[in-house]
Amino acid sequence: MPSPPVVAVVGTCDTKYEAFCYIKHVINASGSCKAILIDIGIYDPPEHHHIDISRSHVLRVLPEDAPNVSSRDTALETMTRAITAILADLYAEGTIAGVIGAGGSGNTSVCATAFRDAFPIGFPKLLVSTMASGYTAHYVGETDMTMMYSVVDIAGMNTLLHTILGNAAAAIASMALQSQLRQGPSPQRRSVAVTMFGLTTPCVQVATRQLEELGYSVVTFHATGSGGRSMERLIREGYFVGVLDLTTTELADELVGGVLTAGPHRLEAAVDKSIPQVVSVGALDMVQLWPGLDRPCQVFWSTFHPPQALGQTIADKLRNALPDRTRVLLPLRGFSGINKDGGPFWDVEADGALLDALRSAGLECPVEELDTDINDPSFAVAAVSSLHRLIQSVDQHF
Image 1: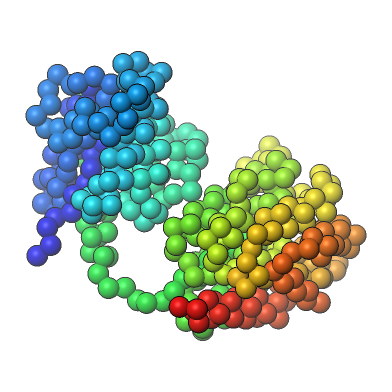
Image 2: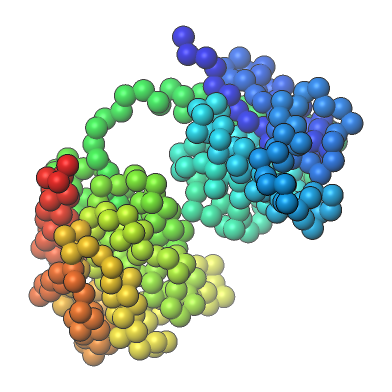
């Protein structure tokens, strides 16, 4: 029988020792998992016999000239570096199968950063926080971190906290157990990343069927900013054998300040990792802005920026792409469901300026033009065929 999975309980025991002892107790009492308590407080707690890894042990991983943790100003940054290193080591050793933190803004900041940086996507990570009912994107980032609102401040214990922290402890114990069970043999289907937007969905649906018929597992990312960041991270973690980057609309938002930007490093990971990729211009006719409504509004992109600038951005991203690992496919009759003949965002001149920028960029990777719009089934078939050939070519070298 395998040993029970271990959950790391991470928190400031100088101020919330009772709460973390309770979380540890509930996990141990589940019978399916064990818990270790790691202290990241500024000061030693008045009691400490339930702490498995002390704050002094955590700080020991840092160089001697690291800032001390005697004041809050330096404590958060210093402790973040230290606990990230400790958790990364525990994960690399296979010691832990899940992690949970709890607290207010300071503890949330430290734990969220450490959980994002120390663990890959898919590793169970849960954070109970007073901040979880507000804007959490900067905590969660591109990861699958679970955040639970604590409802009340985690200061002492009360009936509400017993219920909420008990639920959280039971949840992370279940996650860790399921994670251990999943570590057995899995189907040997290689994964391909695909990017999609609502207005490129017909293309992606055809491409998905084609890829699955070829034996690939298709992982689709919604090009909403966070989707692009998650895909780039997973590419760097080696999750995919190929990328069908049909929908690069996040690049337009990054250039003009749209709300669905994936940041400045979108379209870089596959080049850096030399992963086979096929790149297109899906939904580059628009950016997403908040007009004061409850959802983004699609606005014609060339209203804000010369289209050739976007074409140049793509070319710059692909400048160092290996010619035998990258293809660019350009649909000449439209980039989205509303950017085609008769559509509200159809603009031959603007689209042509973007395409001309890519044509004249002098890219070493092949640039192929298809006389169709992006949602025509023939475009999806051509894109999948190109990616499959690139992957097969890589396979032949190993």
